[in-house]
Length: 192
Image 1 (cartoon, rainbow, N blue to C red):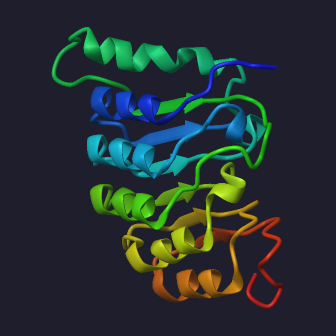
Image 2: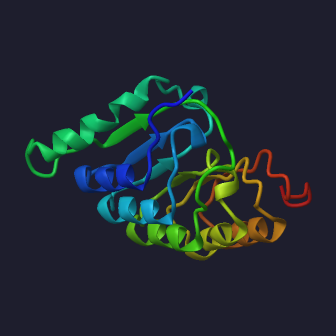
């Protein structure tokens, strides 16, 4: 069925309302999330302390509450009500179910660049719930701009990811300790 879908405006509200945010988990893929590079950029600019951005396919994999989508207004509203000194959450989970794998904007290289530029302490990046939204150019931007702190990268289900991008990431992001590439159809077993 229908339901709340988070777009660029929701990420902008989180960026404005939660400047101390260190971890953002939005589980459920395209059923709950429809953002572009603009959304990543506004979130990153407002949340320079972000250490983990996790956008997995499944709420079950994260242990998140599938009814958590309704909670999107709480942290942003609390911060806008004044609650003192820029308030906002430091750890925020949103969950939902999987649907329409290919119906959303692409995350471009500029979105990845902005994320890494404004969030230099990012240690966990999970884009497995974005599927076709992560193209080869975005993956190459990960290789080019990955901060030294990036230790965990999950690009599973990225159906546009190719061998050359994976090789570039593995060669450039020297701080990586964990890389997940499950169900990347264009990645050969030679690099995975």
